[in-house]
Image (tube, rainbow, N blue to C red; front, top):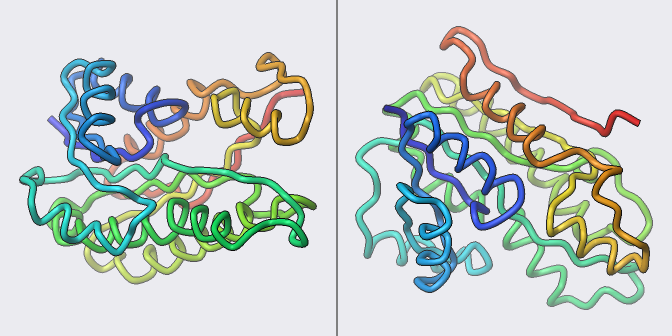
Length: 229
């Protein structure tokens, strides 16, 4: 039985990935920002367990994890958590930059660092759910795109550094996906939200499971997925 540590399992892509892994008999451990959220997520994902650590406070992750029992092995680490706040550079306050950089970039880097010994032992796969914004930045998306461009750099460096330990690293770049985050983006953009126009979270989850399930002699490094239309 493979063991998967997943962030962002409370909704959207992360939730779908967690549920599909559980349905096929794998073990899922979710990272939740606090005990209340951990209880909510595990109730929604029967069979999953949780550890508590807030990606918005990367400097406290080491302390938080030191107080809890981590899995004895981790076969994959899936970074699916993310936050987005849109706005032009002229208007975007520092706290919004700091929050997005923490949750989308520094938190994932720190969590990866802390569990890296387990990842090395297992020859694990690390999957970063990035974004089209991690490849191209548009007006109003500066902070979010910067965090996702940084996430690509993190994945690329990690891949080069950890290849000798058998750790394989994948970046997934979904286009607009029908998730609660996308609905919030549309609210910020002042546009009507029609989920039928976008990729489903299940389609993105399929690409993630494909990366996880490749034979040991192969690794999917970068994959872009876009709506059909």
